[in-house]
Length: 402
Length: 84
Image (spheres, one colour):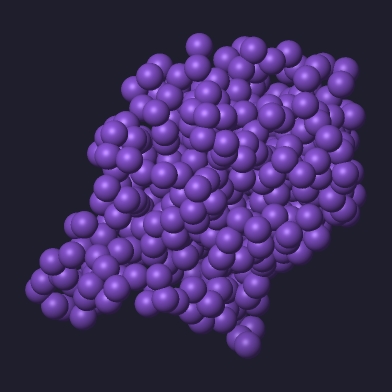
């Protein structure tokens, strides 16, 4: 069986425009939460978000390209460029044909759709812009990456709400292992700060009015985030042959469905996904030294995730380092699994575990070592990254230090 | 007892959870009526529209019984009536 390694990382988020800045902010426990931009004060029950600030599309794209790209696709492209640069890949015609691009997004170009339909419904115009469809389609991120780099292997988008990016990365692992591709760009991107989307989240009553405190007794919900993150994945032997820097091995992936409730989390599905990821990666629970939790900071998720971790790790669970970096970069929905995969890979690479920020009071129902508020120097052998989506769709990635 | 409001809450409940009409009292917990979190936010959404109030998340979260929902809305209506 081919082993698959991570050789390139790209990440744009509220913590900065590159993976390097993302990692520094995580280690310093510096959050990307700020008052929402472009929203009239008092028009929502919450006031904060983890938005990508100071992003100027004109600095990254030609004017005609900007017209074609929704913000979510822009984030996909910017992070893919960084990941490819970081990997130092030499594209040969043969490699381009064997390159997969698999990109998660929960809502695609909903922001563009919103803006165009406002013209129709509110301004009574009788037409929308001809580029609306290509901007809105969820596969736009994957397609533009393929077009820009000339990659012609298996390319598609994955949409499973908050697990989208983890499903995308896991699928890429299996395609590389199975020999359907020789290199993959996998990750996710999301731009969910349209006013309609914010209103929909408000109605769900899961957004914190102040800040996100995962696993803390006084947690009040999540903070929405946005951005994009990509991993360059290659077979181990190919990476070695070209002398690439290997951040970590993507050892395994595990997927499952709760088949329980469209929004309420369950214990069994996540536990099965974690066990499946361990089994797929040939790992035992004892080898796992860090879990990057789904950790939304909602009343519903955190205790259920803690129970699932207890089911899988047994007596080790209370002492197993488990942090939620959503407390820093926000919940970037379909990009969340990719941002968190970058965090997990860099945790293994640097031997530093990023903290759960804004933590105040332990919750007996979340009996975990949440790495509260301070990053921790710790070299661990392997780590999990959890994504558990609305819809009861679970995807867990298992990474191993190289 | 604001019978109009109580009836409004009861009928909104019956719409969200058909069949809860039998033996419905203000003392019943939402959980015992079989409402899950999605049913509860849908109920509050319906009531906000009908009554013309906005129920803060914190208050929504602390409402356990049907009576809690009624009292919460009554309180918010008074705030609205009193003006800014």
